[in-house]
Length: 201
Image (cartoon, rainbow, N blue to C red; front, side, top):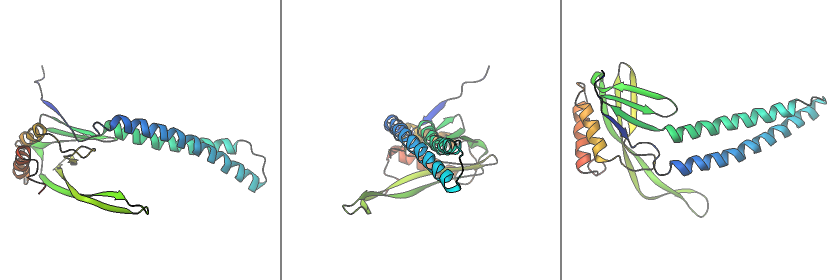
C-alpha cells in the first residue's frame, strides 16, 4: 500500500477570472473563426480569379485552413486558462500550462527565489500606454534538478499573492533539498507567510 502523500494546490493560475476569461475567449474566438473562414474564402476566390482558373475547391480549402488555424489558437488559449497552475505532492513540484513539468525538490541542484517587477499600466485619452500607480513585485521560485528546470510565479494570474499556508508548504518541501539556495528560499517563504510585504518592499 502506497503511503499517503500530502498534495497542495498552489494558487498560481487563474482564479476568480478563469470562468469569464474562458467564456470571453470562446465567444471572441468563434467570431474570429467565422471571420477568418470568410476571409479565406475571399482570398481563395481572388486567387482563382488571378490565375484565370475555374477551381471551385480552392476557396473552400482556404476558408477551412484559416478557420482551422484560428480555432486551434483559440483552443490553445482556452487550455492555458483552464490548466495553468502548480501543485506540491510531497517534495515533487509540478507546474502546468499547456504541458506539465515536474521536479523533485529532494534532488534539486539549485534553488532561487527572486522578484520580478511589473508596472501597472493604463491607456491614456490619446491611446498611448502609460504607467499608473506603483509597480507590483512578483516572487518567482526556480528549481533546477537533473530532470530540468521549473519556475513558478508565487502570484495568481489575477495578481494575488499565494496564501500563507501554501508558502509554508513550499518552505517545508524545500527543507528536503540540500543544495545552494534552498535554505534561503525556504526562509524567505516563511518570512513572506508571516508578512506578505517582506519581499515586496
